[in-house]
Image 1 (cartoon, rainbow, N blue to C red):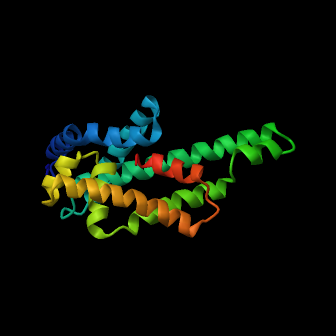
Image 2: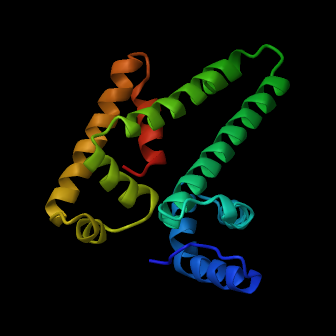
Length: 195
C-alpha cells in the first residue's frame, strides 16, 4: 500500500501522486464503471477524482489510507453523476410531454429517486462494522473475496456469507422503511452496488 504523506518538495509530491495513481487507478476506474456503465464518462470521473486528490493533498489525514478516500470520492462522484442524469431525463420528458401523464408513469419523481439513493447509502451505513468493511472492500474498492478475507483475517466463506447477509439486509432495510418501494426500485438500487 502506498503511503500518502505528501511532503513539501513538489517533485516528491508528483512522484508520490504518480505512484498512487499507478497503484489505484484501475481499481478506482472499475468502481466507477460498475455504477456508470459508460467508458467515456467513467474516464472523466476518474480524472476528476485524481485531480481532486491532487488539489486536496495537503488536507488528507496521513493516518487514513488514501485508497479509502479515493473510493469514497469516486463512489460519491458516480452517484452525483447518476442523480444529475436522472434529473436531466426527467426534465427532458417533462418538457417534451405537456400533460406530464406519460412522464409520471414512466419516470418516478426525482425526489423519490434521490430519497431511494440516500436510503441505499443509509442501509450500507447501518450494516455491522465488520459487514460494512467487507461490503466496502468488495463493492467499492473492487477487492476480491479472497483479498478481502486476507486483509481482514477472515475466511473466504465468511466474506461470502457477509456479502450475502448484506444483500438481504439492504433489501429488507429499504423495504421496511419504504413499503411502497417496488421490487423494481429495490432491484435498481441493488444493481447499483452490484449485489
